[in-house]
Length: 329
Image (tube, rainbow, N blue to C red; front, top):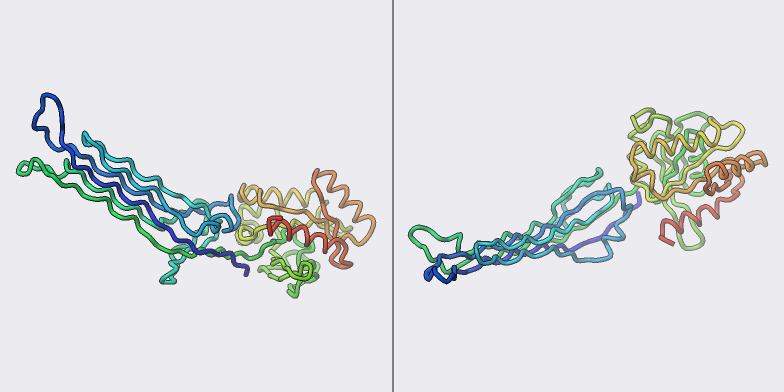
């Protein structure tokens, strides 16, 4: 399983100090206390979102600070609260206390949040201490310090590249061709019931982690076939490689096969449908299959790579292209 991780130091905002102040009006020579309370310090939260697929952006800065609360003002006016800081992380991010090592939360769903550092409370101004007995208090509270902690974020991905397609699209065969993984391969639907992960060499010094994921069928977004079980795996892949069988024995015509997968990804999650995705036509062992691949590219209005796991045609170039996307090139 591929891991993407980083360690962050977070500090919530300090609360604003309360104010010591007394009314000073022309015809009120002995005005009472009117010092306002300080504002609360800002919190720091983590929010899971499908808009990001790695911890690279949040990990670029090792330290994060939320806004401090403003001090109280005269006329009992409260200071403004500090600005909260919300850090967006990928769905599937696990959050650990770096010092103690325990898991704080697994942000496994879109929109889940975790408060990782609580802002300090604002101090009370002297107006808050006035009583019938003590009518002119001359003290106020300082704002509290914001919570500080060190957290470790870990995104567990099934792979950098997830292979998606209808049953028998050639996912297992491709994985077996480019990695040491040995998934079960047979000529009937749902041969793959659990993900298989392998590492493919890219050039002499680099690699890609690929996963052969269970085949989708129409209605998967509603749970048909392997349904949500499959789509949860897809969510934890950084890039998708959609395979379309263009051979004579394909289960569906290529255009319909592409749109079945595309529709299910969109219905399950709009963010998932927008994940970086390449399309490859598989089983291009003859001229007829290559012609279908070209026709599919024209029909979709996007590049379709013609590959053959049997002969190796187009595979090196495809891995290079995937590697460039994963590494941000």
